[in-house]
Amino acid sequence: MTINEIYERSAVLKNAINIDLIYPSRKNETLFGGLAPMSSQNSPEAMGHLIQKKPYYLSAGDEIKLFEAAFAARIPVMLKGPTGCGKTRFVEYMSYRLNRPLITVACHEDLFASDLLGRYLLKKDETVWVDGSLTQAVRMGAICYLDEIVEARKDTTVVIHPLTDNRRTLSIDKKGEIVQAHPDFMMVISYNPGYQSVLKDLKQSTRQRFISLEFDYPEAQKEAEIVSHEGDIDIETALKLVTLAGKIRNIREHGLTEGASTRLLIYAAQIIGRGVPVHEACRSAICFPLTDDARLQETLNDLVEDIF
Ligand SMILES: Nc1ncnc2c1ncn2[C@@H]1O[C@H](COP(=O)(O)OP(=O)(O)OP(=O)(O)O)[C@@H](O)[C@H]1O
Ligand SMILES: [Mg+2]
Image (cartoon, rainbow, N blue to C red):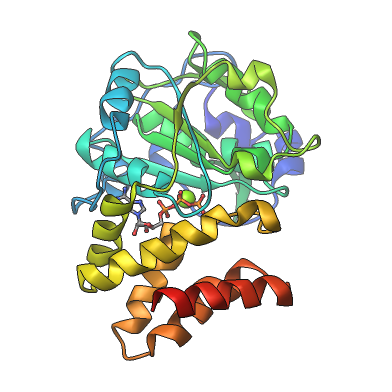
C-alpha cells in the first residue's frame, strides 16, 4: 500500500496534528509490513547532516579507537560522564572522522516516541507522513546521538531495543512499517551518572545493549590546552583555571553536586579575553553557576583568591 492510498483512509486523519515539511519523494514507499527502501548516504537529507569542518578534539585515551571498533562492529555506544567534559564534542569529531551524518536528539521528559519515529501531518487536505529524527537517521545511515537518554520517557526504550540488538530494526507502529537500519546507522547515547536516581536510571536491558565509554574531565595539561584553544587564552592563565577547577572538584563531597566543568573554564577564559578582570570572570563563569549556597560561595571565592 502506498501513502497515496493511505491518504484516502480517513482513520489516519485522527493522527494528523499539524502542517509541516513533506517528503514527496517518499510517496511510493511500501507500507504495512514491507521493509522500507534505504535512502542513499549521498541524499540531500544525509548531506545536510554531515559535519563539514573538522571539530577540534583532544583525545584523552583510547576512546577514538574504541569508538571506531564499535562502529566497525555495528555495536551501539554509550558515553558516560559529567556535564561539560567533552561527550558531545567527541561525537561530533567521530562523526566527522567516520564521514557519517550526525543527528542529535536532546532527550527530555516530554519527548515522545513519536518525536523520534515521526507522525502524520496535515498538508492542505492531504495527510502526509513525516519521519522523526531517529527514523531519518536509521534510513540515511547516520550516527544518531540521543543526549541525556535517562531524561526520555520510558516508551522510547521500546523503540530503541530492536534497533540496538542484532535485529537493527525500527518499528513504526502508526505506519505499520518496519525499517531495516541502513548498514552504517549507529546509535550513540549519553548520560550523566551524577544525576542518577531511582526514578531516572537506565534499565539493565537497555544498558546491556551498549559498549560503554567513560568520560571525565581531561588531565590537567590536556585540559589547559583545551581551555587555551577554545577560550583563546594564554596557556598560563588556562593552567591556573584548570588548577582552580581541580581544587573545586576536590571539595565536591562538601556539598557541590558536580565539579566545575571544562565548559565553564572555557567560558571564564572567553570573558577574560574580552577584558573582564580575572576574579570577576571566575566568580561569574565558575563559582556562581555551581551553587547558590552562600557558605560554599565563600569557599569558592577563597580558592579563586588563592590561585589568582
Ligand atoms: N577533549 C576535548 N577536546 C576538545 N574540546 C573539548 C574537549 N573536552 C571538552 N571540550 C570543550 O568543552 C566544551 C564542552 O564539552 P561538551 O559540550 O562536549 O560537553 P558534554 O560532555 O557533552 O556536556 P553535557 O553532558 O552537558 O552535554 C566543548 O564545547 C569543547 O569546547
Ligand atoms: Mg553534550
